Length: 546
Image (tube, rainbow, N blue to C red):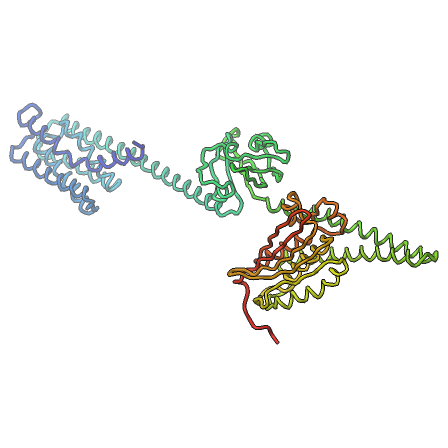
């Protein structure tokens, strides 16, 4: 049984102990009646039985009210006064003051102190003094030595009762202080947990042995678990690896450094082989109530997978763009310098024309690169034009008229194959034009012979706008990477044509912004089919505006 519960039970017994006095009075009275104890004060059987009967009835009612929870200080005070009076009468007319019964008065003193604090015990003590005084008063022939014994008995019983009451009071004060301290500790812990749980970052506190003591719900979300982590070792919960895929014991590192540090090069691996990049900040803690050798640490964790990915993409972007810009700029600059030199030397105009053509092609390439980058930036920022009603038939006819000359120049057939009346769209016309334009120019660029077809059709759910060519196609190796930023196939036929590797990436990014999907089918040396899938829920049938 816990100490607090045992103390409460003892307190309850002592508080209601006067109710058991009849069990003590009966044997004392019977022994005095038979002359086995001092019977000088035994008045008669009627008085004895009356006192015991009244005391027994009062005790029964007192206990019954307590069990039923009907206690009140006023009624309890009346009962305790009655118990003291009946005990006084029992001493005067049954047992006498110098009998062993006097010891039970200690119970009256303690019970009064429990129920009514020090004032109650003083009143009970005064009743004890009154019983001794009345006994001496009613028996004037009592020897002086016996009178002194009565006074001594009063003082001894009073002193014992007082000491017990003060010990009990001190115990209660200590218990109250302990309860208050525990409540304060619980309150502070709850405040700490509330603060920790309100943090956006994952937080975990461990002791000097690496056992997890406090953590927040963000940590469970980060580690994708609902297991109670209290008492678990941090190295069992947090499996970390560095950039070289070597396992990292972050707790051992914390124990070694014993200072604040952070790392952003660590990877946490899940059981399904998925992984995330983590930023971890570690700080040692040493609360004032701990001794110098009891240490702990606070770990703050954050998922930086997205930031790391963006950082890697940024570095790759800078590297690729620098390379892509350097080559055409160098060629254009060289050709322009050559043109100037050739003009000064009076070189054949055809040679000058060829150099100018090369420079122009490089400048066109640069313009295309800048245009793709600008469009990509608009898509990633979500800018670039408002939604507007778009006539798809008219847009496709415009593409046919625009790119037919380029197809004719390469001796390719450029075919427009669409339904007579396609639904009009409420869309971002700039984005949609950029997507289809990139698909058409790619098809024309990588189709050495045959045809390029611009096809549009609908079914019950979607509008499909497809660009179909009979070109070089895409190998299985390249298919999974065609939409990657700056990716260009290693196929020599692809390398023969200039390109930024941004076209299909821009198409996919813009399509996702519009809520569309881009699919493709391709077979090496047989051609490709790229399709923009537009849900009809995003289309609105309307008569063309005049």
